[in-house]
Length: 292
Image (tube, rainbow, N blue to C red; front, side, top):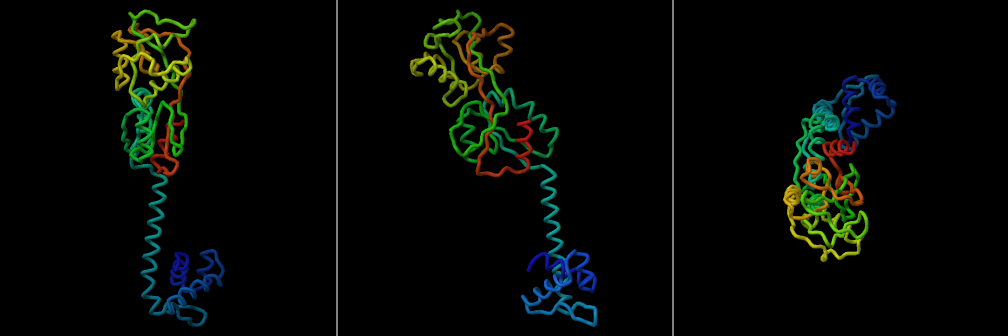
C-alpha cells in the first residue's frame, strides 16, 4: 500500500468517477484503475461497486475511506513539518573555540548571527586547539574554531580568517640578542608561554625548528593557562612571548608592551567539523555566517 494509491482511492471516492479523478491527478484512467485494483487484490476486498458508468463505495470502501484520509492528513502534516524545518532555523549549536578566537574574533560574529537567527541557542566552550579538536571528534561540539594545526583526518577544515602573531616584551626589558639583524636569538630569551596544545606555543615551536633549536633548549620561565595571564606576565617584565595581535594591540599602542620586529608567518583561524556528521539547519546557518 502506497500513499499514491491512497490518494487515488480517496479522490475516486470523492468524485465517484474514475476518469474524473484521474484527470485531477494528472494520470491516465487506466493508471487510476490499476491502483484501485492493486489495493483490492492486495487485501482481498472490494472497495467500489460498479453501477452503470459510475462507481460507488462498497461497505468495505466506506469503512476504509476515513482511515485512508487520516493517513493522508498525517502525511501532509509531516511534509509541512519538514518544510518548516527547512524554512525556520531553530535549535541549538554546540561550539568549541580556542581562546583568542573565543575572546576577540567570535563575539561580534555571534552577535550578528543572533540578530538573524534569534531562535537558535548557541553553547560555547573554550579551550586550546587540542581541546577543540577532541570536542569535535567526540561529538560534544558540532563546530570547532581553532588557531593551531589539527591532526585528525576525520575533520574538515576551512579558513575563516587570518591572524597576525607578534613577539612582545615588557616596555622596560632590553632588546633581545639577535642572531642577525631582525632575527632574535630565541635561545637567549626568557619565555612566557601557554600550555601544550595551544596555537601560540605551536608558533614558538615552529620558530625553534626554523632556528635549529631543540624546544627543550628554549628557556621557558612560565607556562600559563590563558592569553590574559601571559599578557599580564609580559607587561610585568617576566619575559617575552609570541601572541596574537588581537591580545596585545592595546598594550603595544599604549606602550606597556614593546613589539619586537620578527618575521612570523600568519596563522589561520579555521573552522572544523566532523566529516561523518551531517550538520542540521542551525549548524549550517552558523557555518555560512562564520565563513561569510
